[in-house]
Image (cartoon, rainbow, N blue to C red; front, top):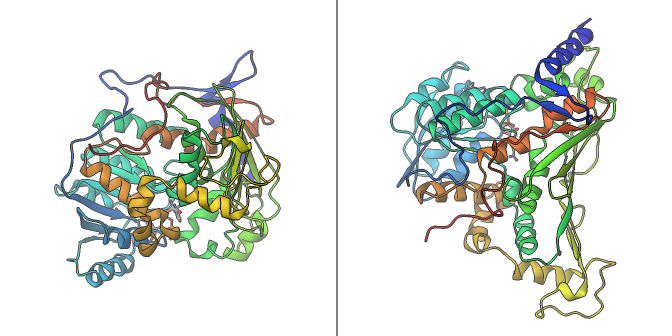
Length: 459
Ligand SMILES: NC(=O)c1ccc[n+]([C@@H]2O[C@H](COP(=O)([O-])OP(=O)(O)OC[C@H]3O[C@@H](n4cnc5c(N)ncnc54)[C@H](O)[C@@H]3O)[C@@H](O)[C@H]2O)c1
């Protein structure tokens, strides 16, 4: 009965939100931009001398962000908020140990973030809650005149995505998704190499989130994550795989996602995992064990994204760039291959062919030669501070740098939308026999306004 109800609800949601046309492509509604509102492409806010930040959600992920911010110049940690007071206290201890004053504390219920957002002395609200609270907190922050930074995936439905876009456009506040994998040393270096043409034209990319969450399931607050997987289909965590490769393809900066198709295995592991973690018997588990999404772009390129948090396979984000003259992959072993003439003269060309990976010493020399300026500047310190090997710190550093210098952020609200939409669009495709579903133009006509992905720097 419960399963029938879920299926009927999904069917009802699909009926109201999308329509199939004669070309067989399912389209979802693109709400008209409200009058008087303009896009946020290239948006830069006034510079902020000292970025005053409040953190909401201090479970497993949030405290690391607080700790990283204690290492940043030009920030002030003003407020800490979590439902559980002990989680706030844990972060107060981090501040004391860093020699910083304690922050204002908010705890006790799931609405107390509203008081934090209403404070006059805040510039940025940094959201690390479970997924169901990302959007309410971020909307409240922007409505109260603060920029919002949201953990991944920032939004889990099209309605949430459009709410974030419309609120960001209307309030003229940044709404950034904290996609740390865009700041991984390998991904940043390969992006630089791709932008300099080493791989020729990139025509196909792949990314994934293969991470067996077995050890983590019991740790989530109120079992939110396993429950979300139990009740939803589509790729629920696509952004680690998708973010970095979209930057390579210049998505909404010259190219554009057009349609996607998704398919999944049935769920073999959901029900037994749920029983093991909660002791409860359930009769359905929506999310398949392995989900694949394939996306085509306006310029005739393809993207493949995979999701698997169930099977005991090693951690893997794939990160593959397939170019007309070269190839890069990060997993399982980082490697490059090239047409030999692609390589700079500083590299030894002996025994190179496009049929095999370049030797490790050539790979390492390329990684050094194409290390981006940001990594040169902050990479070693980021490794010391930590957070997934340093990439989390580079992400925070860039966010604060851009806010302090009044620059456009590296990741805008349309990136957030494109990288998060795979969940609901994928579930529509799966529910319709893997039919193609149009990826909406979240910029509503601004896809070619920015020419290519780049990081902004102060002059
Ligand atoms: N980027 C990454 O590498 C990465 C890694 C881990 C987690 N995450 C993301 O970080 C977020 C948090 O994950 P987690 O592992 O810390 O989960 P968690 O369950 O450990 O922590 C969530 C915390 O949010 C608090 N919370 C929930 N609703 C709240 C509200 N309304 N107000 C205040 N506090 C509230 C809970 O009390 C809990 O402490 C998720 O979005 C997750 O996807 C990202």
